[in-house]
Image 1 (cartoon, rainbow, N blue to C red):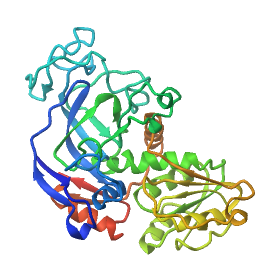
Image 2: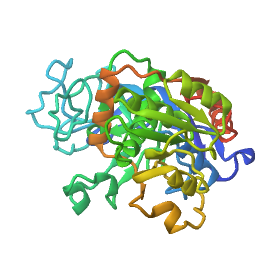
Image 3: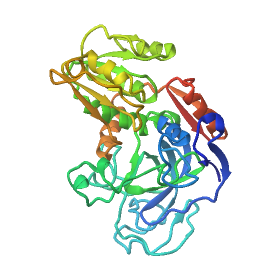
Image 4: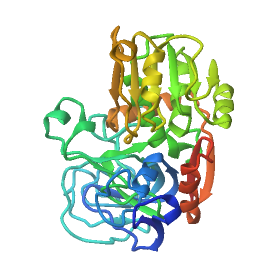
Length: 387
């Protein structure tokens, strides 16, 4: 299959991303394989390619905003009751190898027997704790950043699986969606809302989900005043959620095109990244990976306001002045990945409130160009790779 790998991390001008021909992966126990229909290009992919994130394995295939359709099902995955030729979930789970779209066995070995599956719940959601209803060949699913957790640590037990020390991530620890096929644990895949194209759905799976968690971490009060610093793929989705919930949103970003988009989407104001909002902010989210903006955003907060930092990577933060930036109970918070519950909540919101997803499409063969354009701030909205 066609794919791209991070070979030698470095600036995009050095060609860290290389095209490759790889074997089509086979789903293991508890996994399904998707034929990729769209994969979003996330700034985290850029951080991995350029070495801001230390690679967890050599020659990783990046990409963690994946939309695809099941074309093979691994042992131990709960099958829908009406799946053609399916063994009922109660009958010897894991006794067969993976089943392909043609209905033939394509592998062997014992299954997990865990009966994991993709869940229901308002047409979206994940398998664990949401009421698994099984999968069938051809189902459209989404693959996001969080690839797995141990499910047993203190963090998982208290509902904070995003902090699990044993967590793994799509496109960092396991191969992702800059390819024609990808495998995913079925209990970490998402059912997707109707009414969106594959290209529109892809950015929802990280830009949307992680942006939603960052928005929640900012503790924006009802009808509050929200500042958004940076306005790319994630920010333009989080802004719409906040506006739908009654917030006044002020966007601060260096890109004139992004400021114009913010106003089109309903922002109350849009100005330069280092400018001042027209009123004090109850909450702010920093999407730009620029540490210099932390004191700027903190100074714009009203008393008791919270700044949430959305990214996995941030350049160094300059010294803060306690009286100017933190006193009067201003808070600074990070955001670490997301839980599957965050994903289910956000996709339910996307199903109820049709989000305007701004997409810049690229062919899979131009993945390096897409990342280069992202690095140079030439992408409006979200870049998405299409086969």
